Image (tube, rainbow, N blue to C red; front, top):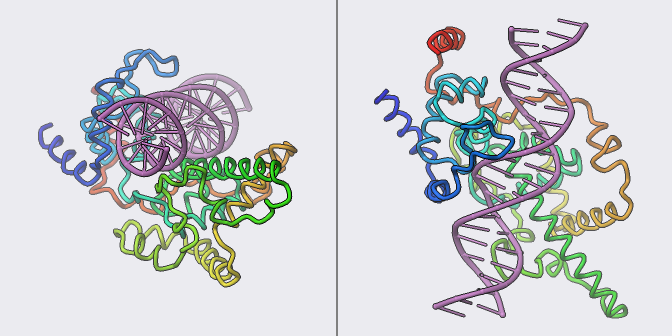
Length: 300
DNA sequence: AAGCCTCCCAACCGCTATTTT
DNA sequence: CAAAATAGCGGTTGGGAGGCT
């Protein structure tokens, strides 16, 4: 098993990030919460350690991305299959693109969200290397900011009704706390195509493959983006509209948005393949699963 | 320097859909 | 065909990082 370890470690070196250390540290303090109801007794939950990651990577390479419960068992990880899958999909999977959402991705997300609603996994399929979780988190942050901004705006206009009609997009885009500088207004208004190519185009081969896979939608969106740029339709305006829509929805609680009448519900059924179906060749090597399953089960 | 605040994101939960037995 | 197992999805939470006052 020693060479397994070293291979796993080698695999992990691909994925190790600064956060890893943090997770490890956290897990020492809070990772041993085993009492939660949803997690069977004896199972770990909370942040993953580097060792666990390495172990998971190794066994996923061995058995493939399925039978997560089985994989969790034979790997010796005291984790649920569900937890293993999540860790793999959201963090360990090769081809994941890390870092900030680029302006182009931002715009694509907006486009797709108007099209699909909160179907994050569907949206993620058009954003190579991004996970549904990532996009979901991003969207949540953005909409929250926008809502806060629009509320502030509404409050301001209520107090000073006559002079408040003139608002700048910058003031809307930047949250009240926009001074933090975490996400600058430049990221929205200074959108250009080269930004994406710079950040995404030069990525690894997985990304290239993924890019190919999400061709039509992406190219359509690009086209639309160009049109939008030509008509000077900025991200600020996009987000303002989203905020406005959210505000309206919160008033009306229409049965459409997010429910059966949602535009997403009217779309033709989409194949439920995960985003990674397009890059299933990442495995270093493959084995006959059936044979191994049997062996492992017999052994256990 | 310290406390506060916001953002980011990993990870969990509950539920549904799909596949296997 | 039904039940069980598995996979996947969307919503939510909590903690760390870092900027601001």
